[in-house]
Length: 226
Image (cartoon, rainbow, N blue to C red; front, side, top):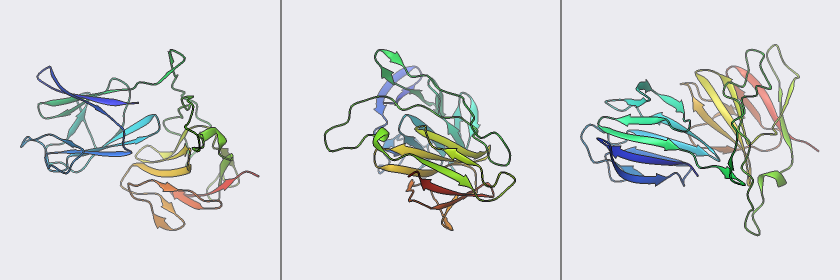
């Protein structure tokens, strides 16, 4: 499980496991992570976690959010990244251990051709046993997407990874394999993906057989393999 280490002036204040899909950070009390300081906006930022991956989003804060010293609007978090809110820092740490060894981040890009491409690559699932009655991701039926428009219309991409990232830099969405099914989530960019003609906001949307997705101007159909 990933976690954030909150500190100020080198003093560790709190360790925060990322147990929820979306955790907000801000000065107001209703935030999941409250930092009571006037330099922090009421709702400053949010961390969205999908399985083993987390994304940081600045929520139009007054003073902005830095990652490793650089201002960001949305950022794909990597192990060891340092997030800064004024004098406060949060270090992002990933704890994914399988048989004593950390899982390897793959940088495969199965769909290179423009205008649709995998821009960050995929991450393999961590092998773990599930409680009785809860299906594992590997028990899901296999699925794929088929491009319906653009120069690559007709091409298919099998969704074999835990997280498949689609789009172009600046306009990115992900399809995640979860025990409950396949889910589409907006990650980056001012233009949100569409699902069956409806805009997908910050909340993940479960995909059903033959759903039509549109991202970066390209339409594609999600389908379950027989």
